[in-house]
Amino acid sequence: MSTKILVTGGAGYIGSHAVVELSQAGYQPIIVDNFNNSQESAVAGIESILGKKVPLYRIDCADAEALRSVFAAEPDIAGVIHFAAFKAVGESVQKPLAYYQNNLGSLLALLTVIGEFKVQSLVFSSSCTVYGIPDALPVTEATPTKKANSPYGATKQMAEDILTDVAAAGGPRTILLRYFNPIGAHESAKIGELPLGVPNNLVPFITQTAAGIREKLTVYGTDYDTPDGSCIRDYIHVVDLAKAHVVAVQRLLDAQPDAAQVETFNVGTGRGNTVLEVVHTFEEVSGQKLNVELGPRRPGDVPAIYADATKAATELGFETETTLADSLASAWKWQQALAKA
Ligand code: NAD
Ligand code: WQD
Image 1: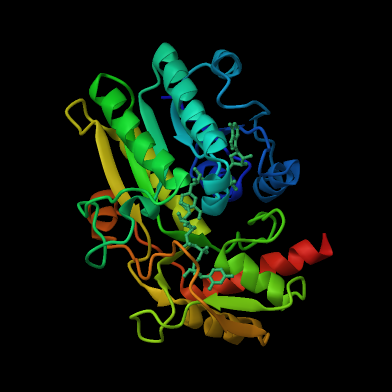
Image 2: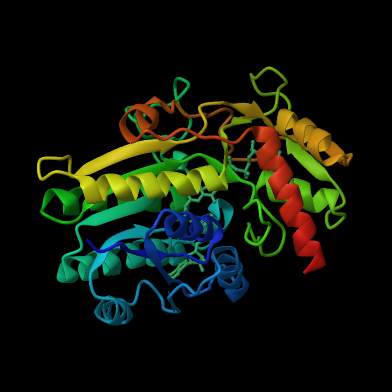
């Protein structure tokens, strides 16, 4: 049986870690990326960790003709993991059309070509953003989704619906992975998150503040109904998240004909941590004192969300292994490696 797995967005933050884990689990990942939010250095990092080359196609995933040429050049692709998308929530409000075009355009082109080449298995990067502000915590996969509060979130909801319809009509068997907040980097510090410009996300902002690139970290809101007043999230180490993809791929390749056509899994730790807990844990593991300002709420933020991770544990056999402290230590090691690069 073929072990070739096409990884769209494989040079990106999560995709690069998934490519490493796939290869180390015995799969042959093939990267498709147009580097609109990543750099070729990520592929060099992957290859340095693995000690071998990984096939790379520099194409736009929304270009069906270019995708066809990849599937033709790589016969017997057993499955696809589709990471390629724009992901900045705020930017999506400013540039909604770009988000609908890229995130849905790449999905539609991919599904078209997957259909032509009769690929049976697909893993899709969804997000906890589909839950909006949940009525109860933790959120299970059965928690109702809420109207998306950004075009980015809308693309994830629409993509889930499109994939469900296509799978039901004989398209690829699909696993939707709803990620919570990925953080940290590979232990080698050869791959990690490469935020362009000022980071929106908490952990890169923390590490850049500790490195002196940013003057101070603003904690967005300390008057929420949480133990210390700051927002709660479920921070999952990116290597744990990457491993969930390996397990999902294996489940799809092992699926019996009567298996479900679409399955949805939360991928989080099942733990919620406040922003201030993250800040203090970072200070402990790094030995760096952060310049912290307690600021107002950031518009659009969900006060608290974390995963019920039971379904992934019982049905996928997937559980996270890394503590918040170790995840933050890896993020700091990566930031220091970036400074030396
Ligand atoms: P990323 O930007 O680091 O990686 C995405 C990769 O896809 C980049 O390398 C980019 O160059 C590539 N890409 C984008 N559009 C493309 C196109 N049309 N053709 C080819 N390549 C294209 O982002 P990430 O954090 O690794 O996220 C990966 C996926 O996970 C995305 O779908 C994102 O929406 C989803 N997700 C991310 C988070 C998060 O917090 N990072 C949380 C939930 C879901
Ligand atoms: C985390 C917490 C902020 C920066 C986003 C997307 C979501 C998903 C993951 C893709 C919040 C606080 C942040 C700062 C702060 N992505 N914060 N100071 O907003 O949970 O989720 O990424 O699907 O869809 O919305 O992540 O890292 O931006 O924020 O206090 O400088 O840190 O208010 O409570 P978020 P984040």
